[in-house]
Image (cartoon, rainbow, N blue to C red; front, side):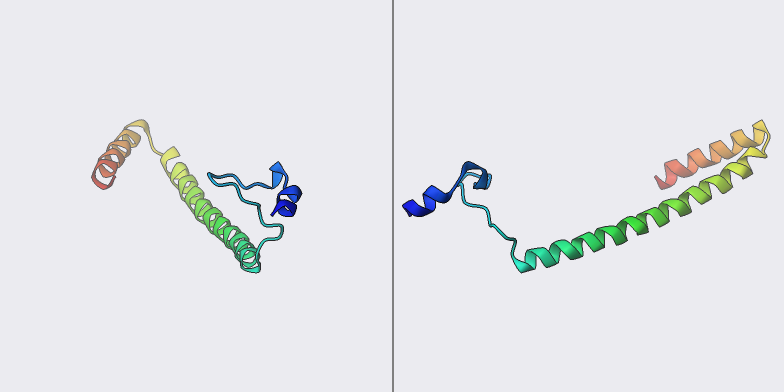
Amino acid sequence: MRQLLREWSVAEYAVGLYPERADRHPHVLDRVLAYWAGWLALWASALLRWRLRRFAARVLACATELGALDEEALRTRARQLSARLVREG
């Protein structure tokens, strides 16, 4: 026990109520899960970017359509959109 305590340093203690020595090497399962979590995060971010690109394209299409309207027609569309947002949330 004394040998073990002599080898420990404050930097090796894990944060918590009961200090314990941190693992020197992560377990194989931890490494595999971290690897797959990284790939999953990359895939999910690509999917999110794809959805955002679709949304941006729809906004731009709507902007060109609304840019061609006169002021009164634009007010009418704004009232319709406001009512739809209140209904659908």
